Image (cartoon, rainbow, N blue to C red; front, side):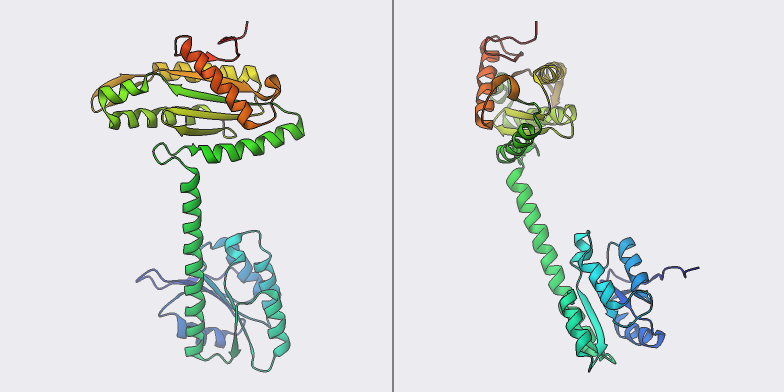
Length: 326
């Protein structure tokens, strides 16, 4: 029967970086822990297998310090598992390997396996703290850069007002879906929506109220589509919905539902109730025989204007202005 997994030795006075210390010698473990516990929270593991199980369970480990020679799973095997992990956070963890001063073969192997640094045993306390501090700061900086990159990517593909996807992301997703649908011989539809008389809303109630109307319509659209669909704000009062694996009938049914829900939604802003309607144009890949997303959107746009010219608050599914199937 295996021993229970070790628990964290945590300094609770303040949030501290969490170090996983892997060492089968209790004496070495205690000496190293004594040198670190003032500035770090510690997790202890007696071999590579215990350490690996801890890494799978503890998502907040910041750095690993491991011995090489251990029972069950060695430090080299642990290092290999970390670098080959499917979890990017585990895979990118900094790992400091402890070896004896004259064991160059182990050092070379650890380097090949992806070690970030080495410590000679017996470990010098000042060197230990210095190396951990350097690698923790470097990792923290890298993670901050990755988060900033992710945030910038999100800003580049998200409409600031409605938090829907923007035109750029819509086109990228549409191109990918177009390729998938052609490869698998499946259909795809797009829907373009425009809020009727939106300029009048802005002129009558002000741009703040107009923004609230856009936000409310965006939320309605997001709630009504499937997870695989993409809803985007194209600009102004115009929205678009990408519907993969959706034929003309399915797109028309969704379009009519959207039109009806918007018509019935009375939006209250600063105590004022604003009723709005929307016009929608729909185009479908199989029915239109188009070659590109631009062509499909152009057809949907044309039908949107047919819906507007036909009286607004309606959908249009064909170039003759029809709003429903016979």
